[in-house]
Structures are given as C-alpha cells and as structure tokens.
Image (cartoon, rainbow, N blue to C red; front, side):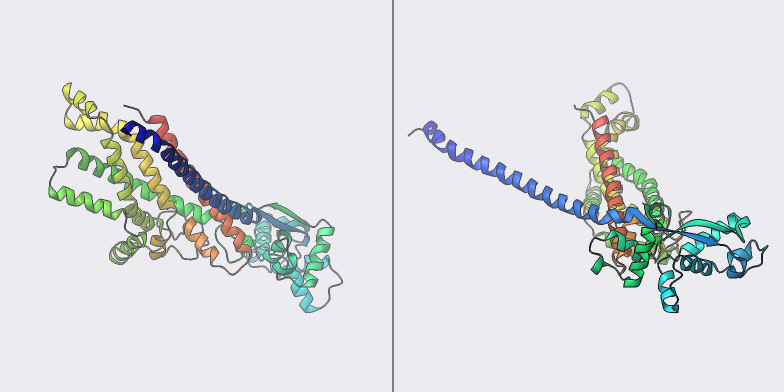
Length: 420
C-alpha cells in the first residue's frame, strides 16, 4: 500500500475529528452564551423594580400652629418647622377611624421620611402656601413600595395586616400611583432605599476616570513611543519592558496599597477623593496602555518610516507625523479598554477610602466621593430588601457604560485602521 492510499484511508477519520472539534467549539460558545444570557436576564429582571417608585397623594394643610411657626414666618423659621406633624395629620385625615396611638404611628410609617423635606423645600420656595391647603404627591416608604412590586406579597414585606389594608384602601381611592423613579439618577446615596440614587457615584466615577485619562494617556503613549522608537536596545531597556509586562499582571489591590502608602500617608492627599482614585487607577492602567500602544506602533510597516526618512524627514518628524497618526486607532482602542477596566475596579479604591458613605454630590476632584462599583458593593451589603433592585439597577448601568466604551473602541478601530 503506497502513501497515497494510506492518506486516503485516513481521511475519513481526520474529517470526523475535525467535525468533532468544530462541534465542541460550537458547544463551548453556546454554553458561554447561555450562561451570559442567564446572568443578564437575572440582572435585568431584578433591576426593573428600581426604575419605578410609588407615590401617595395627600391633601396637606400648611397650618402654622401645627408647624409650630408664626403666621408670617419665613426663611430660617420655615426651615426648622415641624413638617412631620402636618404629614401625619394629612394621612390621618384619610383614615378617621384610626384612633389608637400605635396604629397612627404605623399609618404615618407608610410615608417616606423624605416627604417632610420635600414639603419644607416647597414651602420655602412658595411661602404664600402657609395657612393654605395643597394637594401633593409624596414618596411611599420602601416597605410599601416593595409590597406593590413583589409578586409573593405574603412573604416579601414587613408591613402589618393593618398597614396592608390601609395601603389597599389608598389604592382603591386612586391615591397611590407608580411613576418612573427619577431619584435613581438625580440623587446621591441614602440609608433609605426609596431615597437612594447613583448620581453621586456617577459623578465620582466621571471625575476619577477623567483624572485617569489625563494622566495615563500622555504618559502611556510617550513611554510606548520612546521604548519602541528611540530607546537603545540594551539590558536596562529589556528590564524595563519585562517589568511593564509584569505590572500588567499585578493584582489591583496592590496598587490600592501603594496609593494608600504614597498618595495619602506620604503626600497627605485627601482620602476618598477622585484625585487620589484617579492616581491609583493611572498606575493600574499604564501597563495596559503602554503594551497596546507599543503593539500599535510596531504594526506600522517599516516602509512608512523608510519613505519618510528617504524624503529628508528627521527621526522625530517620522515618528510624530507619520508613524504615530497611523498607530493612533490601536492606541485609542487600548486606552479605552484600559479605562473600561479601570471603571469596573473596586479593590484599589476601597483601600484609599472611597468606600465611605457619601450623600452629597461631589463638586470637584478633591471632594469626598465614591464610584459606581463601590456603590454597588455598599448596596449589596445592605440588609434592606429594596436595595436588591437598586444594586441590580446600578450593575445594569455599569454594564451599559462598559459595553458603550468597548463598542467605542471597536468603532474607532474599524473606522481608522488601515490594511497594509
């Protein structure tokens, strides 16, 4: 039997192996896709309740005597008035049959604690309401809100039977309605789920990523250009290259420890500030940007350099006017991927104090702030059931940001890349 016959005899077996290999590959892809679909379905289904909020309609009488202020009060006096008292009176007016003190307290608990501050701001902006009545919508407490959002109501809430009966009565009278929860995107963090939002974390993430971009991009690209185009080939440069590659594999929490020791303890920069967070994430992102930038610069054909040098361009002109513009799509792609990685980091920021409970929206780079991944971590650790939906909604927002950033990287690469 000659070689040709042996090869023909073995072909069916080779084809079967190839088909099995392709089948295994397709099965692996399908399994991964199924798990991803399950994960996204779980996150989206749990996050949906966070995008709505129940409100209660009340007829509020801004009685000066109940508020504890004079009939012509204004300014500071109105700011410190007893708004909780007029809220209690308003909801008790809907249930005149409730007479026991404990029942009255339970009835008032259906209203969110934020309602009194909303009435305070309303009266300060419209002082002519003092002594008059006005129909207002106030937030429902998180327990009541959860009751209407949960299918298994019997085991899902902490409301008493009386509170459930009162809430159902309000709903029958069209005094409860569900609205889009704009608070999720307009307010900062809160101990009360119905008042908690992600705006503070979003602004903190924006400031932190801005610092990271302004520092890591020029430093990373400059380092890549020098190492690839100007650095002499010796063992010291080889040592630097090896260390850069090793830094890309260092656990992120190590950079957090470095930031704590250097930026906070040594330089005295403020804890829990986007400036320090940006510096720490810059250290973590630099290796990724340097490696990606070097690969993009190396991918530019030598003929481009030779042509530029052949018509009299200097080495610097060749690099910055010819090589770097052609490598820029790959450099931008690496930078965006590095920033997307930084956006999802939690461990290094925990080490520099960005795990603090921050209610106010940060107004600058040195204000106390948190970021979206840390906000998710804080909410996931909360015992309040309503924070489950808030956590899933924040995860969904973070995933959307990451998908957009990675999509932008793909778009830039496809739009500006050239085939040689």
